[in-house]
Figure 1 (cartoon, rainbow, N blue to C red):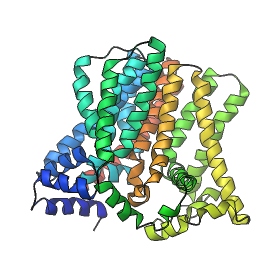
Figure 2: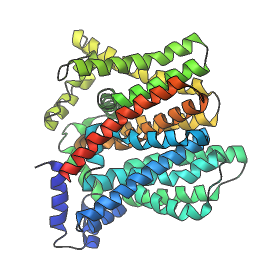
Figure 3: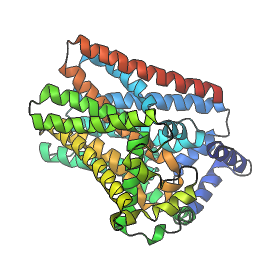
Figure 4: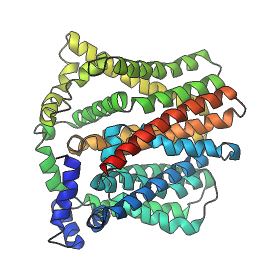
Length: 444
């Protein structure tokens, strides 16, 4: 039986004997501190499945709406391009890797733990982002942002993203305006308080021990070792599973760089990621199932079909920097090349927009996407939970993608070539959407 579906079944069985309140209390003491998440999960999973389907669809709509509002706040409002942007954002969700999309969205337990916190966490950031860009925001909606923040705070990963993002933007706004934005402070305070309640749950210690047992050597790793594994695992995901997202981001950066910057050095720098991810995608499609690049040789150690074997091999990873042979040199070059590519993207973002607020927020989304998966390497959850730990990472990258697309649409107002490219891009997304929806109808 699929482990995802079995989790849903186990929850339903457990709730035949206890109330949602008792279940959440027991979970808080013995497994994790996700009070709000577990309460909504246990209250809804026992109802007719149509209830979850309706609510999950509403959360998807909220996610699209939030992404749209954030992108408009960053890039400005161009009415003639709104339709293009809305369609692109709605369809971009289907660029998510299949394993990430299905385990984080189209599975009851997974949706409450990944889709919902991500959507609500981003929604809680809207007043903070609007204040930073000096946009008008209806303060009557703050109560909804606060409620969204409460739910999101009980996802450790999302809480870290919201707290870090909010703190940086609030401080920058305060330094610029010489005053504090009270609604932003309220959102941040609510998230911090609830995150502390979740982080300090007695059950977290027991869960840590249980998941660490799948990776016996985990507790022997140094801080550097844990960061290394998180970095490596994140690179593996971005290069292999999220390569389509990274390729489109890189392509948009290159188009914008050639449009806005005449310096040859910066144009060449922007071409490096496009070439890297383009070759990665082509090689993967042309030789499916085979080891196609030097980076893939490193990733052989991540035995996808056997987690225990994967963990055993992970323990040997530091040796690639000390055992100098042809294989270790190949691995070192692959990792360093990957880091160079991601550095080129970061520098390109800075050079594209210069010393502006767009640069800061775009750069924050990019770094938050990378850091959100690397940081949770300090918990064995990153290895026990599988692909879905990258859900927030990929959504943040989609916001960056939509931001770049919006800037491009604003930059080139009259271009038949651009319109043709956009049509081809949307056609691909429509195909992906139909494929996902077909599977959804068949399975659910």
